[in-house]
Length: 127
Image 1 (tube, one colour):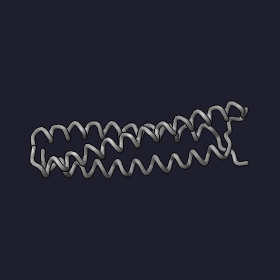
Image 2 (cartoon, one colour; image 1 turned 90 degrees about the horizontal axis):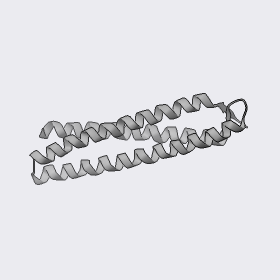
Image 3 (cartoon, helix red, strand yellow; image 1 turned 45 degrees about the horizontal axis):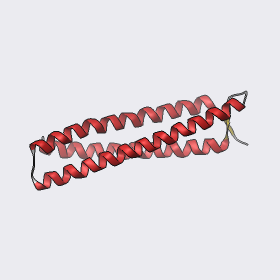
Image 4 (cartoon, helix red, strand yellow; image 1 turned 90 degrees about the vertical axis):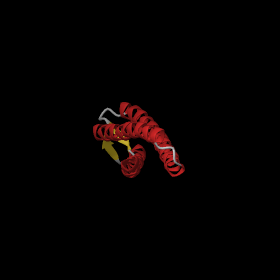
């Protein structure tokens, strides 16, 4: 049965949570800019893009919340497993879940970066 040291896993979880929370905060800031753009520009084309970005910010924030929740669940499961091991190791099944969460976190970071970049291009046109 494969085992991994819990300190490495815990560090990765913390890194993912910090990164995801950063992007969620960044999107909240961009949403404030979006509100400002909507207030200054009421044209149909602009409002269509405003609605698009508003929806995307909401979707990504929900995705981030979901991934963060899953990470916290994984952390709890790992903590229980580690308590059962005097050496501080966890079961390989939890490690697989950990790897999957890492992939989800990285994919969400990529989507968030792309969304923020697209929004900034839009904002440059209308600010």
